[in-house]
Amino acid sequence: MKIFLAALTTAVLVSSVGADNSVTLKPMEKGAMKEIGFYMPQRLTLVAEKPATLKKVPDGLAAPRYGVLPLAGAEGVVFHVVLDEPQGRPTKLLVDSNGNGDLTDDAPAEWSGKPQPGQAGKKYTMYSGTVAVQIGTSASPFRASLGMYRFDPSDPGRAALKNVILYYRDYAATGELTFGGKTMKAMLSDDAAAGDFRGKALEEGKEDAWSGVTLMLDVNGNGKFDSRGESFDVRKPFNIAGTTYEIADMARDGLSFRVVKSTKKVDEVPTPPDHSVGKKIMPFESKTMDGQTVKFPEDFKGKVVMLDFWATWCGPCMGEVPGLAAAYEKRHSKGFEILGVTLDKENAKDKIKQVTGENKMNWAQIYDGKFWKAAIADKYAINSIPAAFLVDGDTGEILAVGNSLRGDNLEKTLDAALEKKAKN
Image (tube, rainbow, N blue to C red; front, side):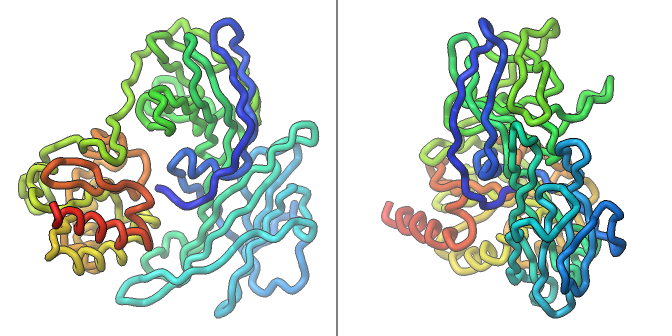
């Protein structure tokens, strides 16, 4: 999933792997989500009982509920969260940013509501904002920013999240590494938002085990981090240019570690196709949910077609649906098509049909029930949703990607593409 947060420029340090395998990075306290391109929502459960470790709260709270962020900070630090949610009134989010058990000495958290469409045309309020907590020490500060959001607890479609705030990391450690004379941008991402860049130990014998922390390297130099061939679990060996390396002596804050040549051997993973604007989209053939064979983009001659990766469980995806459905209804007769690829899990066919029907998603869908390993998503190296590509059905040229196909930008992008198509 992707969300909107501004990047923060940080100093860049260069470390060479080989002669000197010690690495030093700088903290990126905010803006990492935009650079990385995705986030993994973590759950913070709210309860009615105040924790014994929370010593002081502001006066005047009307309907508080309490939670604790499971982030590792300095020894003895506990990051408390209070959500004051009085019925019929705006909610307030309080976060113990310094972890001292006192919520009266912390800066106010950003927290604002926005109406969201729900079932049967009803509107619900989704709250979102950012907070910052100190995961470093007095000697080495690291004020880490977290994005947070909460679905309306009265929304029956989100009943499982009634007592939950979702949060994700917007911080990282950043710099550059040099392998065999080639310098590349590097970023260390605490994807699990645990506040500990060492990652959790991997269970032996489980190939799909994940530490929660990723080292990202811009191997192909295209200015972004790809999930395939450029993202590596810090607890696993990885191959760069034919040599296998491992990470050792990782600091909790991620600002120092060593990269050493490994005695193990793993294959080098090729980077994904270049699907930037102006390039040709990778073609494929698949079956839609109604059993029809579709060849993309071959079957869309004379059209402008959007290939849309989404899922019913993806909040940001569903947030785009009303605008996308309206754009489709308005422009379908002018040559605009959509082909959806859903990353829903197995046995979700009925749910997908219900959601697409209720939301007027009157276009074909590809679904194989493989979640993040969905065949087309894997082929395209999709690691975050929503993800979309606007393509010329005749030439296969990519006309637009990313934010230009979201929110208020969508209609302007579609109109420009259709106008250009009509002239040609």
